[in-house]
Image 1: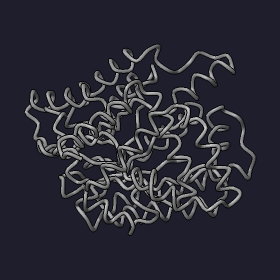
Image 2 (image 1 turned 180 degrees about the horizontal axis):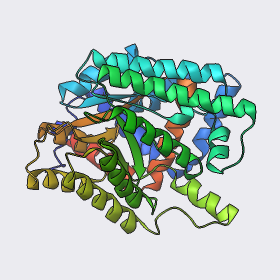
Image 3 (image 1 turned 120 degrees about the horizontal axis):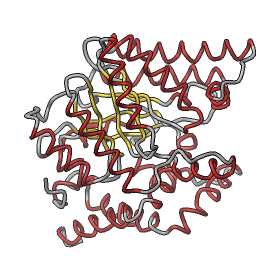
Image 4 (image 1 turned 45 degrees about the vertical axis):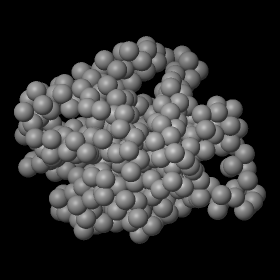
Amino acid sequence: MNFENTEIAFKHYSNAALNRAYWLFKVINNNLLVKVGPPLTNFAVKIRLPIKGLIKATIFKHFCGGETIAECGITIKSLYEGGVCTILDYSVEGEDEEQVFDNTRDEIIRTITRATEDKAVPITVFKVTGIARFALLEKLDAGMPLTPAEKQEWQNVQNRVAAICEKAHASDVPVMIDAEETWIQKAIDQLALNMMQRYNKGRAIVYNTYQLYRHDKLRSLIDDHVFAVSEGFILGAKLVRGAYMEKERARAAEMVYPSPIQPDKEATDRDYNDALVYCIDHNSEIAVVAGTHNEDSCRLLTELITEKHIDPKNENVYFAQLLGMSDNLSFNLAHANYNVAKYVPYGPVEAVLPYLFRRAQENTSISGQMSRELGLIVKEKKRRRL
């Protein structure tokens, strides 16, 4: 695989869009701006300064599809023209009202309905914290007794998850359940496993997410596969490195318990790649979505697909990256005829700000990632003589 072909990677970018991406990544590459930007922006939004238009025209435009499913249509079409599919991701989180959770459930169901109409949207996704109160999940994971009101609240959460997965099953549209912080993840894992056991009999409809920067998650993947085989269902596994490393380490240090995070990047990379090997070795029993911006892992997966004589269009193997990042991976993989999809977040600008800030902060903490993005854009600008 050649991931250096910027002509293929940025074919969907106009000159103006390429220049906008250049300046955006220049800013994100500045750690100071990324640190002070979020609190300043949140303050400006809170006091109603007119900055929504600026946000929507810059960072939101690059990393999000729009504020509604309809607004995402242009992005979906543009990606698909380059062979890349879309995973619609309603990125509203951190709420705590039952009515908001019901509204979010309904919106996730609308993404599934949208997917039934368009082969460019083959997979959907949701976060349990979009439809459940974080503190409730935290209490469940800690094994604390629930009040009668909380028991009803938990039943409501389970009903929302079941409604989403039932719709996905009835529509024959896979849905992924995103991973979250370790101190709420046990409840999420159990929900996902219950839904897979119910709906993954013929094909993988429900996927759980395994964060391999956790030192226990390769073992979890293997254990869940053994359970799936024993119960007669296909395991759906989205593999990621992880999204909460600094928060996890800080909490472990503050509360004086062993960090759940791998000791170093090498250990994370090893477990991630071992997980890929394991999934491909059991391709008929595990459907895998490789959510990664790591070139070595992408290359490894292409090699495994070839070695095992798996059709690159096999529905049990997908590559996935975030919108606005690693286009050199997404579009070159699609050009080579692999299944590739981009996470396309959407939602009201103010509600999606936490997602956008987390993306910026995570990516500056990944050594060399922003410089890599910037370097590829510069290479394409030179090729176009911009």
